Image (cartoon, rainbow, N blue to C red; front, side):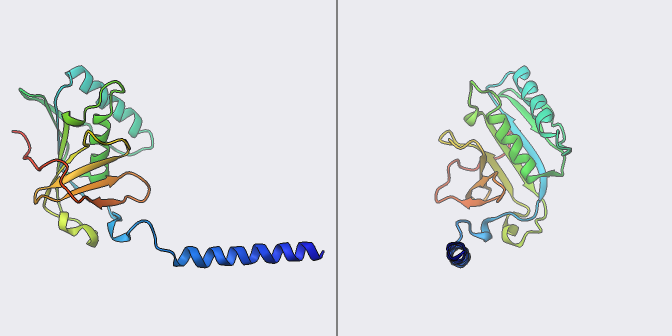
Length: 189
């Protein structure tokens, strides 16, 4: 009986100490860098070095995989250009959905990484989230640099030259980068 009482006391002290230290320790994520409210815009993705068949297969696979949970992704319109294909989405594509499109198109073929062949532009409308309101009415250029080895994020450069990394984890962490990984370019016409 005495052993059980001592063990219980030790466990209780351990739980109390864990609670105190975990609530006082600094958090890994800065809450000011977490996107809490979704925002929308008009999206375009320019794809090069893919055949039309490869692109259509990637779009079909995306729709099959990502609409299983009931999310209403819109199929993009495809316009053939001399250098590749321009995919356009409706005026209300959500930010994370657009990020998923760019990421999926880059990694759609297990044998070929399309890092240098997929670039997206999201013309942001209003932004309700106070922490990221400076993105309102800007165009974000989304891409994944060739150096990426994580596969679950996307980067973007703003039209005013700032670079960010958007993680897809549950935290929706947005990290400003110290250097611009890909300079901003306008949407191909």
